[in-house]
Length: 301
Image (cartoon, rainbow, N blue to C red; front, side, top):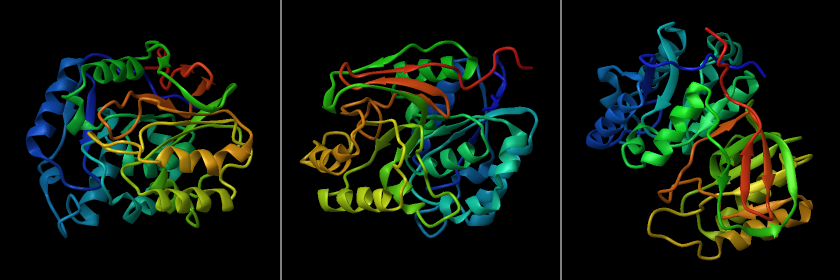
């Protein structure tokens, strides 16, 4: 998989809002956080627009912003302002070869899962991690993001594991938000995790809906050939699993591959950045995810 150039101090990073609107104060804190790690955040006034109450501007504005960030040679990476919803409405207008030619990593999670799947098809690594409105709230995640973008080794991620099926798996890391992945079934971005270690997270879906999402992905063949599954948070800040883990365990355990819960990814306030499209080693028994490569090329210019 081709790798983008490593970011250097002073490089431009586009803050884009292709999904839902956001809190301006949190956005501004995130902009300052990006400056703290030596990057130059760039964004237009359009990021603050609203449309229909749940979109950060109409489809035309959001699409043009995304395409401009990919075309602008002074921009070296993209970070979403917020997730929410909206990318599925415009992603068909961003061809994979357009993304491949630009060769820039994109940072985000939740609705950004749509872009992660597009980047996978473009064979360009992307970063699953906090968006601009969260980067000012977690210094550890911010610093890890800076290391990933600059080509430094961020080290492994370790957590107290809840392994349904232990063991070790290796393969490119792929995945994201469970509901978004299921929503891509039947579209040109329908997931196929053959040969991959799959990362999953979600936000407060009740158990029966999680069952439906898992079943849809399983019946679509998305998990055929998957090497392992690492599950982050399935709930938000201040919430609990409330039986959610058990649903995923029941649906995925028959796959017979390493399956572990409790990883620090998702909406619950601990969302460590990881590089999708990059080989990782998952140790489900120990609760460890180790990057075996970098999303960027330190030698590239």
